[in-house]
Amino acid sequence: MLMAVKPPLASNGATAPLRRNPLGFYSVSIPLKPIFLSLPLNNPNPHNCFCLKQVLPHSSRLNLPHGRRFTPVAAVDSDVPQSHHQGSETLRESKRFEEWNSLTAKFSGAANIPFMLLQLPQIILNARNLLAGNKTALLAVPWLGMLTGLLGNLALLSYFAKKREKEAMVIQTLGAVTTYIVFAQLAIAGAMPLPYFAATSTVVASGLLINFMNYFNVLPIQILKFWEDFITVGGFSILPQVMWSTFVPFIPNSILHGVTAVSYTHLDVYKRQSGKLPEKGVKVVGALSGWTATLLFMWMPVSQMWTNYLNPENIKGLSALTMLLALIGNGLVLPRALFIRDFMWFLGSGWAILFYGYANIVCLYCCNAVSMEFFVATTAGLFSWIGFFFWRDSVVYGFNSPLTSLKELLFGS
Image (cartoon, rainbow, N blue to C red; front, side):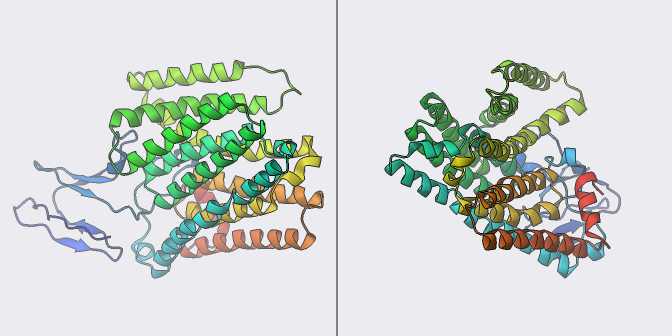
C-alpha cells in the first residue's frame, strides 16, 4: 500500500530524505529530532491507532497501512493493537516472510466460504424436520449455547473492526446472520421462547449496523462508546449466567451469578469513564470485551457436548457437514492468528476446532451417525494441517522448533 507523504523538515531546514522500504512503507530520516510511537490503549478513534508523531512545532502524522504485522505480546494484551513486527531487517525484507504473510491473509479470506455455508446443512435439516412435524428433533440444538456463540460473534465483530481485520469481520458477520436463522427456526418449533428471540433480534440488528457504520467511519463516537460498554457489561453478565443455566436442573436455578457480574462490570465501566481506575485497571477493562467475546464463543461447544450427553438419542439431529465446515473454517484462520501472534483469536478458533467441530464429529462417530472413513479422513487432515502451519511459521520466523512459535504466541517475544 503506497502513501503520498510530504517530507518533514530536518533541524537545519532542509528536506529530510524519504525512503521506501521493500514492504511499501515510507520512513523518514531526521538526525536530530526523535520520533515516538503513539499507541493509545483507549483511543476514541480506533482507525487512528497507529500514528507516528514527530516532536516538531508542526507535528506531522503518518498513517500506517492496514496490511500490518503485529509485535508478539503476552496473551493478556492480545486485544491491544500492536505495531509492526520489530524483527531484524533480514526477516522483514525476506520474500519468504512476505509470501507467508500474504498466504495467511488469503487463508483467512477463504474461510468465508465454509463459514458462509456453516449453518446451511443445519438449517436444511431443521427445515426438513419442521416440514415433517418432527419439532422435537430441534431440541438437539441448544439455544442457550448458540446464544453465547451469537453474542461472541457480535463482540468479536467489534474486536476485529477495531483491529481492521476485514476478512475476520466478514466471518463474524456470516456467523451472526446464519446463527440467527437457526434461532428463527428454533422459535418456530417452540424450542426457543419468543421473548428471548425478540430480544435477540434487536441485539443482532443493532450490532451489525453499529459495527459496519464504525468500520466506514460514519458512526458518532458517543454511540460507539455506548456499544462497547454495552458489549462489555452485557457479555460479561450473560456469560456466568448461561454457564450456570446450562446445567440446570442438575444444579439449582439461580440468577445470582448474572446479577453479581452486572454489578461488578457496571462499577468498573463507571470508574473508567470517571477516570478513577488506575492505568492497569483501564487496560484490564479494555481487554474485558474481547476476552468475554472469546469465552462466550468457547462456551457454545461445551453446551452442545452437554446436550449430546443428556440426549444421545437426538444426536442425529446434528449435521455432520456443519461440524466439518466449522472445523475447516476455523482451521483456515488459525495460521493467520498464529502469524500475527493474536492469542485471543488463536484460542477461540483453536477451541472451536477441537471442541465444536472435531469433538462433535467424534460423538457422531461413536453413535454410528458417520462412517469410519469420514472420521479417519477428518482426523488425519486436521492434525496434518496443524503440523504444517506450525512448521511453516517457525521456518518463516527463523526458529529451530515450532514450539518457539507457540511460546511467542503465549508469552510474547
